Length: 322
Ligand SMILES: NC(=O)c1ccc[n+]([C@@H]2O[C@H](COP(=O)([O-])OP(=O)(O)OC[C@H]3O[C@@H](n4cnc5c(N)ncnc54)[C@H](OP(=O)(O)O)[C@@H]3O)[C@@H](O)[C@H]2O)c1
Image (cartoon, rainbow, N blue to C red; front, side, top):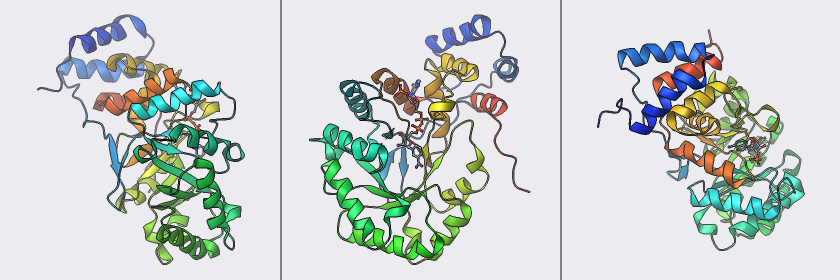
């Protein structure tokens, strides 16, 4: 099948977008009109629905964040339906932390996961002030109890500790792995210098992921840390992929126009952009079943070269390093 041919729905959506809906979007239109005339609006590579960790484990490219879940932002039954909906649509990686809502996020997730633990790739975190002595083992046991499970698929250090503690933290993680309490470990909010130093300590290279903020408005990681991680088979797990609570990109007109061409929401476009490389996992959070359904569509969108150019024009990435 020729990928540049449009089906009827795409054609209709595109006509509407160009002719009627968004007359002011000159940047997007300038890029796209030329492409349409030349017939070069070819689809980019099919989207990466899964991401492979260095140990060979395959995880969905789109998971679900749990920061505010179980804490009254939405009625509990609605959040439960949202999480279950995401799971049924393939967003089976779930991210939480013992710190979120003082354990309430983990308790809520544990309740929803009862009876379907094996389907889930479960991620939780230990805090930087919990790592001294046998603190990691105690924190992990507490998380397991709240989650109602006997293992985590991935356990992350939530934020950096002083470098002199790296060896102790890595050996704490490795002991938990040997005990079968965690299957893999990683870090969060580590910059390039910290990652390099982590990889210098014994077993530091076993770090499975670095969880970092990444979205259209925050592209700084593209400059150094993202390529460095990619070269080492360390997928980045993107938090706040929709921009986070205070900076949501979902009302953006460029995203809305691209979404109208693909028959999806702006949020789905933003998420498809985050996971476009095949080496980034996105963990959007939503306590709304309708939003979760929108978000899951990102797994089946192939952004075109022109879409990516329009997004680059609207949200420029960092300048390349000299
Ligand atoms: N490691 C770290 O330091 C760190 C830091 C921050 C976050 N995280 C993790 O990353 C996860 C996600 O990050 P985040 O919560 O900061 O930001 P986010 O996922 O970018 O945004 C969450 C916000 O987007 C809304 N939303 C979700 N889908 C939507 C849609 N389709 N349309 C409109 N609004 C939508 C949510 O509200 P509704 O509930 O109403 O949908 C919520 O207000 C967290 O839950 C947490 O697990 C980790």
